[in-house]
Length: 125
Image 1 (spheres, helix red, strand yellow):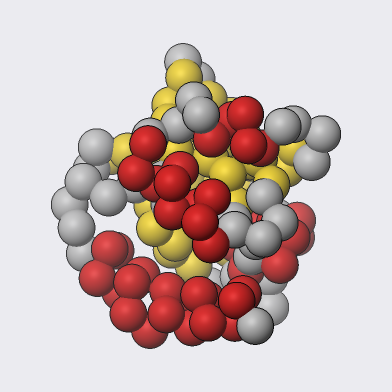
Image 2 (image 1 turned 90 degrees about the horizontal axis):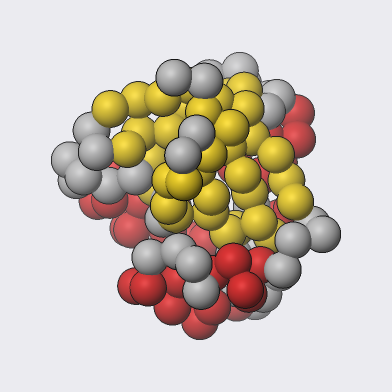
């Protein structure tokens, strides 16, 4: 039930607003069925040539399901797009990882998340 409420709010209210913000971090995946680009507002942190984030609903998140089908992604950081390869890391301690990521987003993920999953994107440029 919580998953359905949160994802409905994100899909129809939160994400359309956040996608328009110039400094919002975005993840672009390829739709596993449509093949069309899918853009999701995210929160995470770049560390060298890697970008780290935590999915609040793990493998139930649509962008995670898209990554499983095709792990080539793009990440928008500070208004600039970077290509990369996403890796799902179920063995990583997602709660510990959240302590290393931006505080506000991490608090939201902890609050609504039911199945945390760490995602690492190896940036190509």
